Image (cartoon, rainbow, N blue to C red; front, side, top):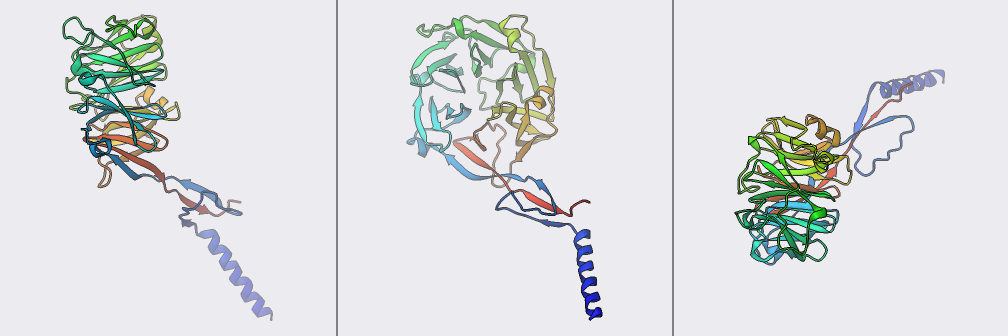
Length: 353
């Protein structure tokens, strides 16, 4: 009897020692909340893209689809359709076409930006930035005159706005034209008075074909206006308040990084985080960064990043926008959307005494 007890006790002791020496690693996909009466749970996230959805010309009634730029305002997705000569408005959740906005054949859209009640369209080939009522789609007025001579907008390739200002990136000029929204007359045929011209360097001048040949982007991030030149990895920054107060037209900071060249940037649901498309170390990828990362120009450690592979194609001119854990991209004659999924792994370790 004593011998049997001793054998059982020895067996239990060996089992206990084995459980202490060995770490169990297993994947749990059904729930993050794992009962852990005696163990410490360590989570490692593994993000990937899945749930593919696309839209082509067939999905918009057979019209041409040439999505050269995107803007998402939290509800609608605005697509600058250059070949279609319009802005196509999609439901951001389903990618169903809701309506199209244009000023006849003049809406040769290269960029689009929504701010407040207005929609701004950079129609470079028409020598103007067109202004529409965002809700009704009605054409209101334009920045520039629409003619080559005398216009303060020649080849508008990029546009963004704040409640106070509109910034126009002009492919033919080495500066940014700034317009004061408080001074705009929406009943006038043209608004050609420039509030300020922000000085840049020689790398800033682009091509009249952007963003199709080489995409540029511009966005107000935090308290500053940022412009990105992917050809050289150059980033310019101006303080918005300094622009309003006309304290000077020179950028407060200019940096260059050939190994991290941003092509587009998108705001997310979190004002402290942004998604970008970028050429990093010679490869196109989509990456998420914090506001602090962008302010410091530190792109070494993204929160999340996705590279192109056999499933996910990332052309060199990829434009991206973020919408509720989904990434929507331009890809030639396609509008593509990928869902961000997470397959976390769990490491269960012996409890530390």
